[in-house]
Image (cartoon, rainbow, N blue to C red; front, side):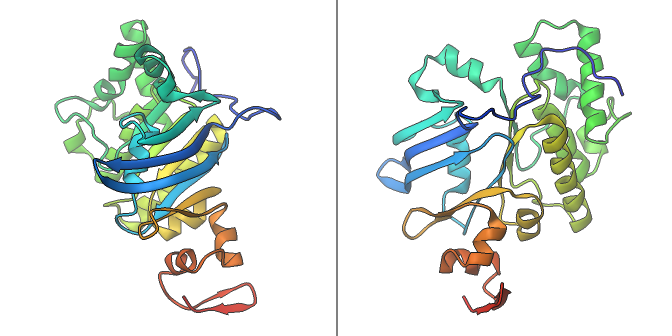
Length: 276
């Protein structure tokens, strides 16, 4: 399917040597009032990463995601998008920066009273001056990218949960963002649908060169698609490991990480027996 013309911010995101990472988190602390959720977080999300935010329940994964997508200001520290401090700029600057970000929420967050095409056109109507026919064309193209060609006039209630997730992803890609965020994308999906979504994420990462950040605790997805990760610990309230999830497991980087990545079972890691 031929791609309609649009100012593309999402293609060719591989960074030349010396360029800043897609997102840099510097000495970040998060909390609500007097309650500290996480502190002293420092790590990079490189361009082209499929980056996993992982950890046990209550560790602050979703809170970190809210900070990364500009919904909550840090208690301390900075979040830099391609070297630019997000919270140091004006509201107009932050709004412009967020055009390069797409978010797929846990339940798809589609408007039930709108067709799939109408849902996808919402960000186009808000942020572009494209003609109605061009928006229709682009909405059809985005749906085709996620395997929903021909479903433009369907309502969310008329499709399955897995298809709703894919439609939500099509809307997240409406403005061709360079960075895509996923909040528990496999939640509520059967294993087959979850695998198909993983495959779709891999395809989008490869074809669109998008940086992808995912909050998940699904081990199958973590190992199948993750290229980089951070592990948040709810007890110490800070990060205790970063890197490729497979390497974390193979090197037994931290007892808590090994326990999480093996679901608490004894596992063969390299030539050693690891008993979390």
